[in-house]
Image (cartoon, rainbow, N blue to C red):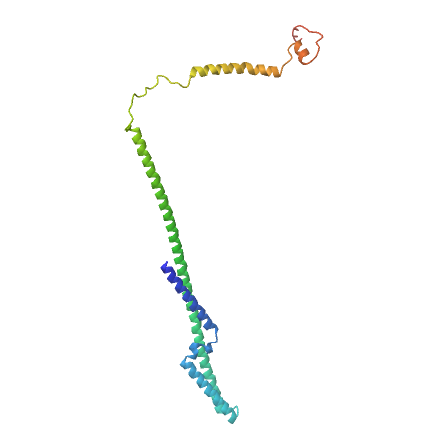
Length: 237
């Protein structure tokens, strides 16, 4: 966390320096603090002012094509070129300063991002470790309770009683009381008989077929006029 705070502070300083460099690069370089404080630039400006004043005096006394005027104009052009070159060098230095400040800011930003990722990863590992520690403590508590219960069970099963005495031990039974096979077989046979006779009888009562004269007259209300005896079956010729 201390390293992250330090990197963030340096990143903020780099951002401020980059903004200041951009502002200086965007401003007029001729009135820049470095230009104004430069002895060489100031001497060129003084020389240019003197040459321009001398040219104004010569223009009054001589014609425009006078050799002294032409020579002085050439000197003024050379001085202006030197001054422009000096100012341009400061402008290039300002651009280089902006590039350097931007590169430093990018490097610090990358370092801050990496450190933040490390801090976040450490925080996640710490949270996972705390979770596992809590689960371990819970498991140890459950295991301890299980051991206490096991000790109690073993103590009780060993017969270590202080105020209890055995009169006699139980004897194993000669035969099993359950299941009663014979009783179950008889009950099953009875149930099968009841179902075997009851189901067909009930079906016959609810769905009676015509088998005799009484069935026609009683159930269907049809009078029987003639009743034939058993007829022999005819064989095909």
